[in-house]
Image (cartoon, rainbow, N blue to C red):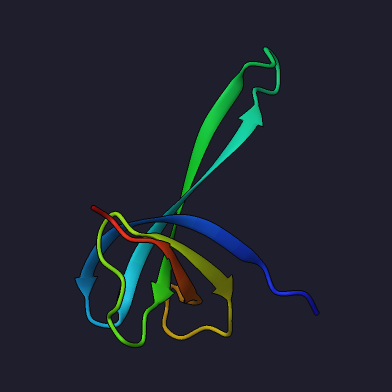
Length: 81
């Protein structure tokens, strides 16, 4: 089974061992065809509290870890300045 992976930006790191990652995707409008930017926010498990706001991270799907957390951080691709 292939695991889902996403790349996004950390928008919140205020929780313990959890970060909120915003993932953007481009989709065409159903009627007009103009490309729209859509944002999905995922709560991801960050075991070492390594990620900080503004970091670009890769997350992958995993078993449910809490009520609304079923993703985990695989790695930090780029640190925030």
